[in-house]
Amino acid sequence: MGMHFTKEYKEYVAKMVVEEGRKGTDLAYELEVSYSTIMRWVKRYKEQKSAQHSPEYITPSEFEKYRKQQDKEMEALREENEILKKAMHIFTKKPE
Image (cartoon, rainbow, N blue to C red; front, side, top):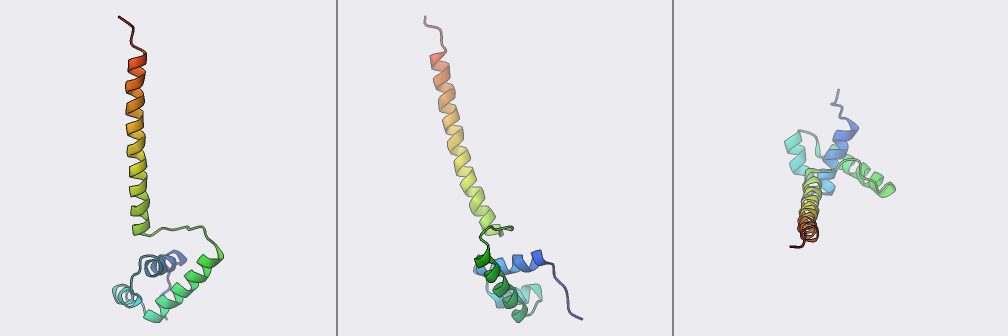
């Protein structure tokens, strides 16, 4: 009897092929799953993706891309906050 994989696992493997550009043959070897099985998961994933556009799971590369974007935005907000603090300090000084 064959192995059973969760829906999440199948979707994760399919994302690695579709969105990260990993080769199905390489993944089949690494994960010890047949190439045809992985390609079936990829086909199903593509069909689901075209039907719905809201991602439930993100790949590690997607996570890194979002994290870098968040870091840039956070740095810009920190700089803005520092400028506002300095301006507040200047305007709240008592005239001498």
